[in-house]
Image (cartoon, rainbow, N blue to C red; front, top):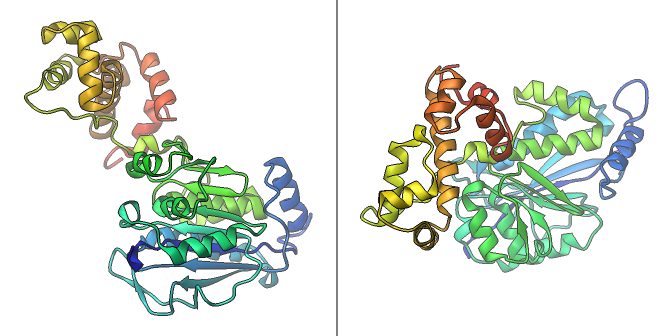
Length: 365
């Protein structure tokens, strides 16, 4: 693996002190950590954050969490502030995937003691890159300490190559979740989560989910009110509704255009409002339901019923994003039958209601 396949990291040390009149921040953090059952976030004298970058790193994976911690400083006394440093394999300037450059403050070889949290940031090259020995050794050395190790977006691949995902519940960018699961079968990859904590391991979904994760860290460190204030400063939500399925296309099970499966798919897309069943799809192409199921699984990796469900969801999403059509009409046209049925499916599959989805994604709204 080349240098641009090395993950980027955020390293955090926890403080003690006070944030505002009333209970001390240490008391608040202890209470929050106890409630959230996270003993790995412990009080420390200062908070030092190291952002470890590589050539080709996703800039927002680094800048997003960094800005959250920097904004949190506005609500803490100077002696309780987060300090940010940039760490890379070497001290040479690194270029991000958008072409900008970052100047490291530290290299892997430089001593960085008492690390509390390490977040491996992603980059477009990581899913296809092999293991980088230097990065794996660095991560393994950090992981033996008492702090938390984690990732933003595709940084989970670096954790996997270091052997840190085995037996853990993890997430990554929805587009790369299947590859992560295939490369590291000992991990339990959960595609729909924005971020997830599993004892000393924390992973987040793609790109902007690093902001969600950093806000969660601030909430655990400094309390939810500080996290809400930081979110307002950054004009983001303090706790995002739903999972990352609402951002990913459900209808990805494409078939060979001339195949019976493709004919069944075409029939479904032309008859969504009629709510066709698997039996109806099979009859439309002159096959038995069992044979159609075998064809679907072999060619697309999903069952006919799963494809029907996905097609309805994506059709509804497209209408919610592009029109002001009433929810009742959307539900009927897309084969849900009723708005209540559509709402139940949206909440189960996407984690948000159709109305919430429209508010979030309606163009020009």
